[in-house]
Length: 334
Image (cartoon, rainbow, N blue to C red):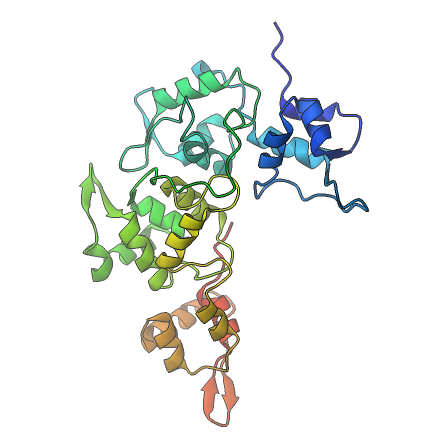
């Protein structure tokens, strides 16, 4: 028997290049409520401009591409490389299956409440490859997108316990965008080293709820604005961001307590819109020494990166707070 067509294949056969929610539902067989829920995903295509504001319409090809990237693939688990006893990260799972790293990172949270949840990770965030292969094999015969078999998610879902509760050096690398050697130096800082909860196997780990606020406080994560793909994926794995849709009120509150507000706190927005600042004021605001600011600017100059330049005023040299913040808290590379 030939396999059932994928959702993308069904959309490819749609008669129109401009599809409403009802059109997508009719073409794919998904309910309209499921399509509306999927359309809340950040990666879902933008609606087309239309004179009829009562009905949003979406371009067929981008929607088909989204379905192709997010639908559970028909994988022959027996053909996947590796031994069943292997411990693998989500990055390795993406590599072995040919899936998108960002899509694979959503699996634990997306299927957390499923009757067939994604296999559980250990304390280091690794998974048993045999269990993952078996789960992928069970998913292979299903044609819905990831999570489509679940009831529509409420607008504000209660915050679930984190999938993981610790950070490894590999996860710190992904969060900060720093290389292995830079992170080795970072975790030797006394205030970070003393937070370690010990080792699991040969790897040192840190409680996520304790280390994350410190990383924000030290300026290794942006206080506001968009997060890059890797930091977002780590926060999804930890349960601090949803795999799809907008974060809940509880998740937003936790991240604000850690030091992050996507739109910026009132105090931070006021700082950015305020007057020119001295280097001393900058060091106090970011909680670092004057030497730390000077060294970071010097390193950026040596690397040929843009740096904020002081402005000569009657009261001395000052910095534009908005320009300096863009330098100090750049969006992580996606």
